[in-house]
Image 1 (spheres, one colour):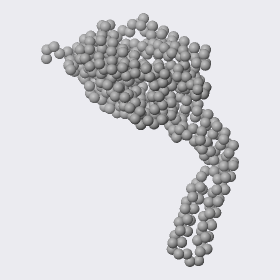
Image 2 (cartoon, one colour; image 1 turned 30 degrees about the horizontal axis):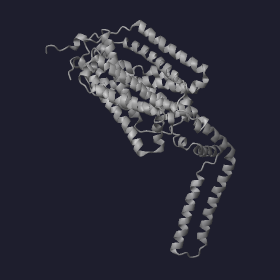
Image 3 (tube, helix red, strand yellow; image 1 turned 90 degrees about the vertical axis):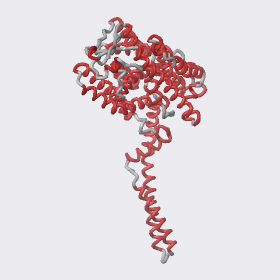
Image 4 (cartoon, one colour; image 1 turned 180 degrees about the horizontal axis):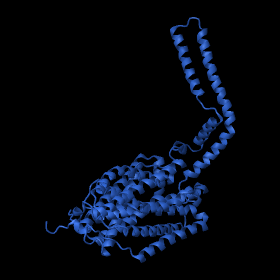
Length: 506
């Protein structure tokens, strides 16, 4: 057909030459800012707790963008989508930043930096309760063994006495015999259970530790199978390995397809993506449980993973729009990306604006309606002081109504400059959303030891650390993104769906 583009004309791809000055600026801002941040951390040890919240805010924001890029890559393959082939490499490049951001998260994981225990209070509380429980168990162990031994001996003696009582009755009635036999069975069952108790010194110590652990922190005791340091480290390794492996396996196959055009790489990407999706969903869901919901280990929400996923998907699409626009203005992708692609990306951004709002409202409504103390505390904190105005202005109006209203207009989605402005707006709102999730926990957590009357909602001056951390991670994120963009063709140049993408109309 006349006028249609042929994928064979683009089989050599298009390669990005990374601007040296821009890379140097990103490097200087990123690594210089990070160096300054940690110098301040050790120069002002009393600010370590507040700075931990700042670093978590910056890391999780940019990690959500990279994870969103991985989601779009997986969805593209699993759904056999053709329209987005020309921008799929940008998705892959975004996803390939996941391990770099995990490296930036390392200071959050070790108590040496003073961040971990300030962020996740269950670590120090669990350790303190277990120390006290072990001390109490050591002091009570001998008396406990003697007491339980006496109880077991008494139970066994009661069984023997009941048997003697039955034997001593000359001719009991059937009812009387049944009553005595039932009593014997009950006593035997009790004695059997007691005899199974481990009264070795080690067993008694473990039993007493559990007893005092339950008395000292009932909720942590109930969650001890999940909230313990060993399993926590296993989960962190799982998140890193799963998300990184998926990103690099798919990107590796995609680049091999560029080189040899072998369709097996295309088939492998499609099949593997369907299998990778459950692992991706599990890793991201439990990561945000461990990093964000566990900022208050007494709080819980079953919609939390979906809420954070919606924000990641929405705003990674915004990053893709900005990347496409910047590359086109620099002279790249002009022959392969059309206004139709902008229109489709705009529609997806609109869909996830709505989806994010739906999940956010559903979580709020269900918690408000149930009115369970353990759940409502999250919103009560964020409805206190200026946080209530913040919520309405930035999340209700800014995060939903503004982009929803603008993106409803069809023409907007075909205007690169306008839709790029909407993408920037959404990214700002996403940053404010992540800030709203993390920072309101900082004041109450770090001032709780001063007593209920002195608990503060904010830490004065801590916003400086928030800005410094954000700018530092942004610089590092930009530096590695520029490196990834220049490492391969900007689009999959030998993908079987390239023709469809080049000529997409919607």
